[in-house]
Length: 252
Image (cartoon, rainbow, N blue to C red; front, side, top):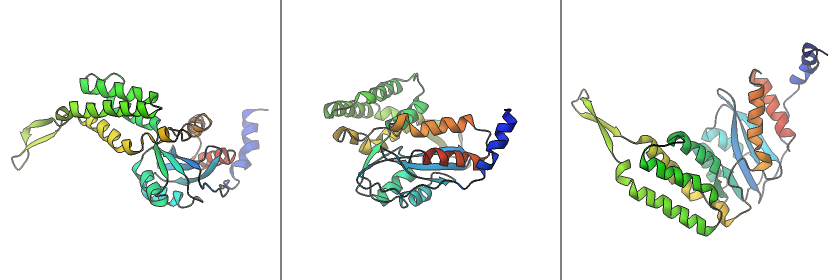
């Protein structure tokens, strides 16, 4: 059978209605939430328990409004939520499930910090925080958590003045003022990343059953969908959405 014949045989399947999520209660369970980009301006938001996919929805982005609509559509109140820390998702979880425990995804924190630091930072402040970041994966006990936090806080104190350094422009503005900006913007961004994550960085230490990454379940459910989308990147958006819906429906 030729490729053209196979394509023609499968063609009617693309026109069938999109599979819809089955109603699933997540009361007292661990809910792992993430978003997958299908195309420019097109996302699928997904929530899953350790055992199965709970729900998904197609949106045009990861705004607070989009996440709020999604979280309020899920039945029940989860015991804990694992998430990547995007402001919209975090706000939606706090609003919808104010009593749920929150665990920030370590993979997303490490990825975000390394994009800012690069793999081989040249400044002492960058090298020091890079080493602290690398040791995050070894934190499993309360004692290890205390040691890691001491190292991080020592780094903040040691380089506080350095991170406040400003570069002053040699050219004046139209009002005659000299412009200035923070010299080490990326290092400051890394510091902000950690400061924002710290309240929910080590929830798993007290509750080991909570995964510390959103890729924990089934070897990374969203990673597998992302790979599937990349393999079929030439598909139109409607077919990518159908592919994603079929994939998630098979995991319910």
